[in-house]
Every structure is written in C-alpha cells, then in structure tokens.
Image 1: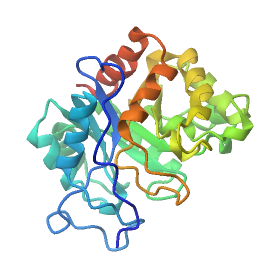
Image 2 (image 1 turned 90 degrees about the horizontal axis):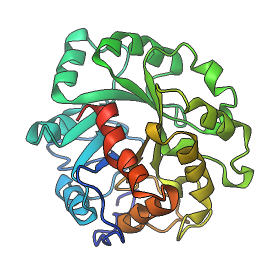
Image 3 (image 1 turned 60 degrees about the horizontal axis):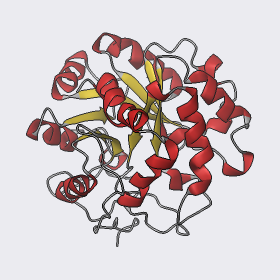
Length: 287
C-alpha cells in the first residue's frame, strides 16, 4: 500500500495558453524502485508514478521545461534526477539533496550535470540545519547556486535578520506556507513581502493546497499570491508540486490543470505571467 494516493492522471488543459519556454519550477519525480531504491527509512511512501507520467502531464499543460526537486525518500542518492537531466540537458535542471560532508569533486559533478541548488527542510527538520546550509552555501557560491528552504513563514517574523549573512540566493517554497486565518498582514508574511524586494530572494508560487482551507478551489490563497506579485514579480517562479505527496487526508487530490489556472488570478496580465513562467526561471536556474 502507498501512503500517498496517485495524482490525477487525466490532467485538464489550462484555460489559457502558457508562453513558450514555460518552466515548472517545483516537482518531484519517482520511477522504478528496483532501479532507484528508496532510502532505508523514507519519510513517506511515494505514489506509484513514473517519470513518463510527469512528462505527459507537462505536455497537457504546455510546459516545456522543469526543475526537479530531488525527493527525500531517496536520501542523498540523486541518481534519478541526474539521469533525467542527462536525457535532455536543455530541458531539465535540479535541486539536489546533500549534506555538509559532500566532496568538492561531487559538487562539481552535480553542477555540470545541471544541479543549481540544494534544499533545506526546516519544517520536517530533514537534512541540513540552517547553520550547516550556510556553511555549504559558502562552498557553492562560485557556482551561482541557491538554497531552497521549506519553512513556515510565521515562524520567521525576523526573516531578514535570520538570513542577513546567508552567502547565496534564497528560494522560499510554497509562498512560505502562510496561515490563511492570519491573513496577509501576519508578521511573518509581511516580513516575506519585505524580504522579496531583495534581488537575492525568490519565492515559489506553488502548492496552495498545503495551507488553503478551500479544498476545492484554493481561492483563499489568492490574496497571498497577489501580494507577492505586487511586492516583486521579478523574484517569483511557479511550480506544480507534482505528484502532490504527503497530502492531508481531508484534501482531495488536485488536478494540475486547475492549479495552473490559478496563475490567472495570481498574475493577472500576460507579461507578468511570462516573467514568472519563463524569464525568472531562466535567470534563477540558468536554462
């Protein structure tokens, strides 16, 4: 039995045409567990999906490129994302998992393969601590990498002070996982709006269902996304969060076409959507 249900394989076509070169900047991929075995004690059991299922979903959406966030169920073995990038170097980039013991030679290998950052999970407290991420950041600074943080923004009302001496770009997952009931004026989210005005800080418009209380339309996340767009559209990227792992039991599996449609509510004009879907990812991930 899989802990996580499968995604919806019949993806709905978005109700608007995505621009050429659009990038899904946040997804996880899984494949043959015999070829790519899970770690000894995975944090969750993934759905029964393969890379081909993800690529089919992208084709329906009209998304041409993708950034694969290495799934922590594989531990520090980044083989699957490395193989996927090797299959189409111009189409894929990756955010890898690693710890502070990684060698300089391995860092160089990952960079040449298409890795452009590493992830730090401050919610599940999996892997690197903030201080160790800072140390590793110094080592990858010359590669132009970033650190991608999964965090709860209301735990960081002093966000700018906490990251004031961070050596590389910072990417905040899932709009900082805002608390809907506290609204956009909550201290942590206001700190994020201020922080994103810096050109070394990025936020992913992704996974509204992680904190939304509207389990069918996720419309209650709109004010948060719109506030981020108003604060600095040049530092935002978008992602599907496919295949939507670790879903709360009370939340129906979202259709990626409907998730894509939210972009029209979040970034109302075509030029802003082009930034979020094309121009900004090209700058951040070096496509």
